[in-house]
Image 1: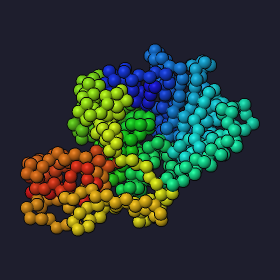
Image 2: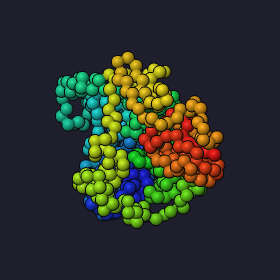
Image 3: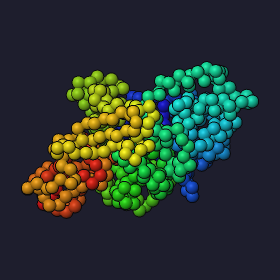
Length: 478
């Protein structure tokens, strides 16, 4: 499958051309779509999608089906109708043409009906209790919506679907389904946030006790999308938008540049549909210490040994893991997290609690507590929900702990909850103002912890993989 997302000119893949050719599965072409936030124009209209589709057809790529994917569910039904009608005219009647959308913005049923009326051959649906909201509309809903028409949704039988959904609810009854996963949000057209990313992000905010700021982050995304060049909000661009909006809310507007977002506006993932804001390009260049580029990203990747099959084959061999194509793809895409996954050491991330959402109570969520000088990350849930307590550090110092003898007088605290990803400086190292001391990971974003002035590192108060709370002491200087 070749995904022509809205970086438009090239596929946004973190691999060399060698790996792309090896794993090329050019059978279904996916053209991603969305609506721009209100007041934004310049891309993502029917003419834009026609140009994209014509480029695909002219490229000579082999395919036997085309799917328009609206990951955020924001494309309005009229545009869906005109886009599918345009595509059907270009493709002819023999090519399978379908629409994939989400219910997040509440217009998916109307969009599916519009797509079918325009000549689509297929649509994607889901079953309760995991239908609607960030997923697709329910099978039963579309059966009802197409009643009295000539559209056949696969000879589905109403009584069998009812029985299937009832059984599925029983099977998933003990698992936590966040309320926002099944709800329509009128705010999504302002973001736009894909269904698959929304609940992952809200769960991270819920875990860190920041869910109350979700609406602020969504509101901040309008500016981020507009000034970022209108790349389609689908993985990984949707995460770039989210990370930058989150940074703007938590640290102040444009005080930090999320690495993925910065590299996107600088051209390292290809050409955005429109040029990004010049001020943001300059800011990203300064913050990331990278010059803007118009070079093909695949050529850039080809020069990077760490994006080659040979490199990741060697990594797998050193870790004692099978060097299969699938494993190479996993570690190439996910690095250390991919290795942990293959070793069975990655977090399961499956939550139970009979759908008692940890955000329903003011007390629910993740907390950092200190007992007898030891720091613990504690998850609190309501009612019969599971409560997990895990030690995360034995050497970390609580932010309220007195500074011990020999520790520097300048304290460096975390600005947000997260995890310690890398520690780049050690006690005794000399630094200048702005040097990166360590890197935290929060909301899938790397957050540099920098020296506030020139001096010497007196203490490092956390370890790699530690969970840290907001305002927790990370290091001291003298």
